[in-house]
Each structure stands twice: as C-alpha cells, then as structure tokens.
Length: 633
Image (cartoon, rainbow, N blue to C red):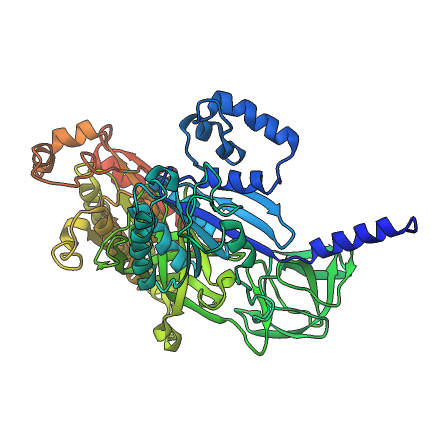
C-alpha cells in the first residue's frame, strides 16, 4: 500500500460523514418519564462519550445521581445545578451526536408544566419527536399537551418510547394499552406517523440493541428508528425567502443586505421581490466572508447585493418573484401562551416574525383547546400553557407565509412591551382579508384646520389615578377654566361612559383593557375634531395608557397622574366603593384586589392630598399655555 493510501481513505471517510443528512429531534413527555436518561443511554451505548466526560459523569453520579452512586446517564444532559439537585430537566439541553448513517441534533426538553414554553422552543426547529411515556403511568395530561403542541408546530413524525418497561415486568399488555390510547389521541391531531417502541432507558433494552426480554416486540430499536426515519424537508425546493437582518454598508461603494436564508435557493441574476413593499430587483452578488457564491441554500448566512438602488430595511423579506409571500396586518393564528401573567385581548404586545417586529393586539379569542378532550372552549383570557385560536391585528403590514406551508416565515413570538419577555408563540393560519379592501377617506377640512378654527392646539389630557383621587373633580375645574377662556373642550368620564359606550364591560383585567381602548378611540376622534379632551378614568395598567398615547400624534397625549395615597382615597370614599370592596361586595377593585400601575414619567404630577383643586387646575392650564408658547416661532 502506498504511503498516500491511508490519507486517501481517511479523506474519503471524512467526506462520507460530512455528506450525511442531519436529523433534528426533540424528546418530550411528562415529568420524570426518563428523557435525559434515554439520551444519555443513546450516547453511552453508541460509544459517543469521551473518557473524560464519562469520568466526570461517574463522579457526579456519586454526588448528584439518583441511582445510589451507580452511573446516572441523565447527568450527561442535565447540566444545570438546579436540575441536578432536583433530578428534573428545567432548560432545553441541546446535544449533537453521529452514527455511520446519520448526524443528530437532539433537544432534551422539560416535562414540568410550568416549563412547557421551553418544550415549545425546542420543538420549533425539530423534524421529529420522541414522546416518552412512563409505562407505570400511561398517557398523562402533559403527554397530551406536548403532542398537541407538536401537531401545531407541524411535527408529524413521532417515536413513542414507552419507557421503564422493566418496572412493569416487560408487560406486552401494558404496552398495547398505552399504544391504543396514544394513537387514538394523536389521530385526532392528524399525527399519523407514530412508531411505538417499548424501552428501558435504565437497562438499555431497545434503545441501541434489541431487547432479549421482550421477545413479543419485533420492531426497530430507538436508534434504528432514528437512523431510518424519512423526514426529508423541502426547504431547498420551497420558495426563496431571506429575512433581512441588517443593511451592510462598510463604505460608500458597497451596499448589501445580510441575513440567513430561510428557504429556497438563490443565485446571481435571480429576480427577487422586496416585501412587503413589493419592490422588484435582481440579485447581483452573493457575498460571504469566504468569497462570492454561485448559489446559496437554506441555513446559509449571506449578504445579497441588488442591481437596483431601492430602499431595503431590517425586517423586510427578500423573496422569489414567482411565489412571493403574502402580506397583511391581520391574521387568524394558533397561539401558545407562555407567561404567568395572563394574556389580555386588546392589550398591546410586540410581535416578532423573522427579523421583523411590529405592534400587535389579540383582537378576538376564538377558543382555547382542552388538551385532555381536544374540546374547543370559550375564553376571555389566556393563562400559562393555554393553547388558543385567535385573531391578531398589527400596526402595519408584514410579509408572511402560512405556518403549514413554511414555518420559518409563518411562526412568530409575542413579546411584552415593558419587560421584553417572550410571552407567547404563534403560528399564522391565514390572513384576514377583510381589511385589504378598506382605505382611509381623505377630507379637505383636517385636524389642523379644525384646531385653527377654534384657536387652540388639540390634545388629550389623560387623568389617571385611584378611585377617589380627584380625577373627575380636577377635570371639571379645568374644563370650567377652558370654557371661560373660550376654548372648546369635552370631558370623557369613566363612570359616565359606563352608562353607554362601555356598559357591556365589567371590571376584570380583560374588560379594563377593552374599556380603555374604546375610550382612547373616542378621544382620538375628538382630538381630530380639534378639541381639548379631558379623559378621567382609572386606567390602571401602563400598557393601555401607552396604547392610548400611541394612538395620538406626537405631543397630543398628556398623561396627568392624579396622585393620592390609597389611605387618603379610602378616607374620602365619596361613593362608598372602598367600603364595599373591603367587605367583599365588589370584586376586582383597583387598589384592593386589583393592581394599579402608577405612571413612571407623567407629563403632569398632581399631589391632590397636598393642594387645592384650584391650584391643580391652574397647573394644568399653565402647562397648556406653555405648549402653545413652545409651538410659536
């Protein structure tokens, strides 16, 4: 054999391994079903653990293990200190491994109900799922919840690993009973590709090697099923999509658009469409750090240059012209709620889809899904781990694909505007087309004209504070002064409006959100009419006050915090409401059993317990005069 032969063989071996396809899969199920142990067993028996790793796990098994000092393979995956101390998985743990037939990326996800959001995160990029079931417990509520989420996320290939068969004496009857229940449930979710495998992650039976004690089972081992699963994706043959991450301008002579290709192929000379603006162009170059490419594929991070000087920004999508994405600002979608604080319809959130971020509101909750019975249940709010079907409205149009067609541009997350926490994950079903035929009618007499006719600068004075703080009293005094000055104003009082505009609403958090939204919409119309509008309403939540501010033009919304301590408001109690709330006769009363979120930076702060109403009204009038003075040249 020539000296070069070994290197040629090695090169051929490396090339062969590089060409193997990659399977991304997730392990999920109820808590303590043995997910981490199963992955540890896969790695251990596939001889994919380095000696130093094994030595570390052996040492950790003696300190943190759950097997009395014996080798605890779950510790290969459970990396967080809290997980090792509790013996559960909290975070999503990713591991990679390879066999001669395939490479794998596995996401080990938590089984506890409060960490369902982590499971959804792991499943969002998976092609296949291993659903574990403890043979002693059977199909659990969390098993059903996870399977429902897998279905919504478009995962149709499931390996059902019925684990801990050693603890039920390797019973064929137990196995078949669980298989029947799970298949019936999965079939209702259109999850039909289910391979059922009885295993023991602890002993290794049917994980890598066939079991010698379950001679009634003749199917594949878990590893064989993973190696042979046909889950080929069509991202390469799908329409071209690349969300723009940033505009690359290192100097005046270069302008490119950087991003990661979500689907499809792109080559220099390809016609493309910039969405949602619908601007056509042609790809000139595909630039990378290693040089230009003649073709780019899904998953590659590239910079595209275009033949035309057109406006492209972060959040736009560069797409194929023959199969462009849709565009809309209203959608029907599935939503998984992931936060301890409830979702409130009409509350403003941020929606992130690809690289695009837009303001969003849930405009209608159609139903929530009972994960036990799959019954559709009416709901006004969503709690942690609820799964719902709803309508969502955005503050602008975005480019999108239906999730079932292309999940990279059809899946989104909802973000809390204040904490920036991810609170929900959604899948777009279809666009609501009813808004596409509507256009705003322009009128010659506009807001500036109406304001000039009244010789005033239109605005809304939004008085917020606890019940009894003095909002209505102050608004009344301010309007008297405006009337005496010949100004045109109107007071929108929360109690008065509940006799008509908002009479159908209660005082739950969800109803309070809708209450403020309606009042803000009316205030916006009155400002458009050129009026000075005084809004006197508790409006306890910052999110909704900010929503009202965003409805107005810059400088039109003036937040007035009518600040009186709770004890002072209770002493005043002009309507006897605090007394009733303390007696339990009124529920969801702000300051007692419902929270009030004070403004952080109001334009005007009024300490009503320290000053007279006349002084407070004079301060507001002085503020309005200063606005006029500042506007003059």
